Image (cartoon, rainbow, N blue to C red; front, side, top):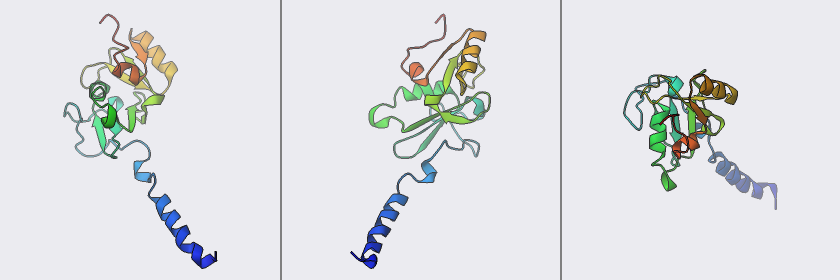
Amino acid sequence: MTITSRIPAVLFVAVALMGCGGAADDGPPDLSGGDLRCAACGMAVADPRYAAAIRTPEGEIAAYDAIECAVRDLRTRTGARAPAEIWLSDLQTAALHPAARMTVVLADYPSPMGGGYAAFADPSVAAAEADRRAGVAGSLDQFIAGALRRPGS
């Protein structure tokens, strides 16, 4: 095979790789702009400390004004409707992180919908907050499954 006969094959592979996992689908979405509305309740996503977001398998973003809205909506997003990615906002920094790396606390937080959920990137901070506020800490999946509830409920 000569160099000139390899060029089309190399170009094909390069173009094919460029279409895989483009930068637009990498990382959490920007929830700071515009009139962003919660996918579950329709309220404005106004306090980024309590926000959450998902990316659907089709690449669309759904934002939530509160973790409790995400929990409620994610209970219905199963099978083909299950999200490809989920992010939660760290209460301390308001930065979105992959939900699998976050610890969720259900306590007396003044979240936008009044459900009392907050998420933390640092699990030791989450544990201390749960103790201080007489709450419960766990993974988002545990709350979606209903395995964790507010103490006394």
